[in-house]
Image 1 (cartoon, rainbow, N blue to C red):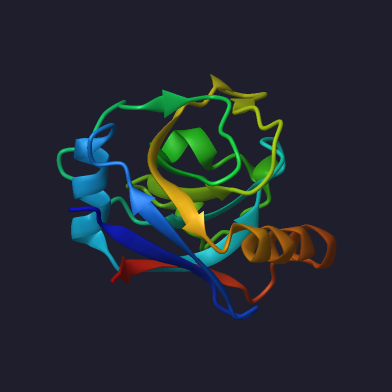
Image 2: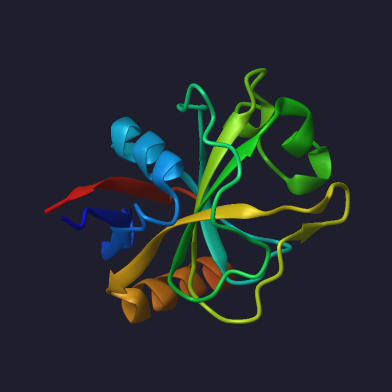
Length: 166
């Protein structure tokens, strides 16, 4: 039976629904599902283009490892990234000192992609593959419009939340 999650930009009051890709990414789906709900400050990507994400404390033990990876996510992809502390703490990335990016434990990045032509490469680290663990099946146009608003007007005070859905 298919499992679904709801992903929301809380301040903007916009949500979408995604189906978990249990067959393609079973370890990642299990880790995320068992850790829900998750919520944190919303960020719009600088490098990857059409991406909105949040950083939360690591929640998977053991980490799921690489499965169903991509460096070219398409609109509707929902991805998991596990980062060590040294990978995202560079001041050039613009995270506040108290954000998850500066945690000694590292961070988990939960991301949605809302447009085409994304490329997951970082000038400091090189390729940054993400595990595609879900696909948005409802509400992508509305989420894309809200994500574009984040890019144009800023992310301050916005949260990105992930929860189980019926």
